Image (cartoon, rainbow, N blue to C red; front, side, top):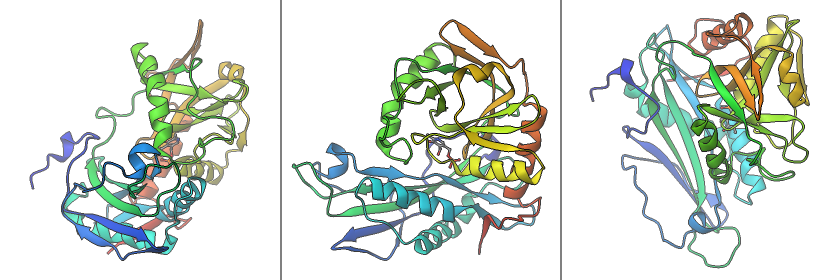
Length: 336
Ligand SMILES: Cc1ncc(COP(=O)(O)O)c(C=O)c1O
């Protein structure tokens, strides 16, 4: 194993092992650590045709004191079960999920990037229906596989603000649909909008509420957050967005720092009033947004680097993740 930690990106890389569970006849098996990253499955498996597939994403960090800590795996355990319920898939016991995450991270400890390089171990659980079937309906058998891979600091030369484009021609989710869960199909549905945004030199697409296209929902793979000119933390309230664990944590951190916080409907026109705007999620924590294009309109935040309030939130949050700041909310789980 010879990894150049400073050169890591966000690509797939096989590691020592993944952990696998199989569900059949109403029960989950015990987990098995496996070195292969391939699966052997029928072409007729449910997942290929009827799309019973959900996933999660979280990270483990090598901390200043040498320990490895996973950030809020219990929240991911709850969220995968919320996704499972919506797609008629079996829930997985939450304590067993956290144990499985710890087991696979411990087995792959050599792949957790060293403290100080800005990298982390990305943890990707995926659950899917594996029964061969032709009729539409839920699968009888399921697989839960948790894989891990080292990833670098998302932005190599520090956090750089990005441009965003409002997606007016496509929605990523339907009203009363599956936008609030981490279903694989949501991401397939957002690929075209993301391509349109990228073709217009915007790395991210911003989606509106699919019912009225009046309010801001979220970015393709991250929640929307804004800082008002009087220093409030504002984030979208919508039934069609994914409840981001990063956003939930940042809201808490903001409140800890004495900032007023608001989770509410945000009208598109309000984009003109904010001091700082960002996308937030596990991959980068906070990505500042410099401009938002909406047809002929441009909302310009005139920033070439992360704004002062977002920076404070980012530093506190990553300080907790890397064990440099006290974890007063007991978010991190130490891997032995
Ligand atoms: C659609 C969407 N929204 C928000 C997020 C951010 O969620 P989290 O902070 O839990 O990573 C993600 C990433 O998981 C996502 O895919």
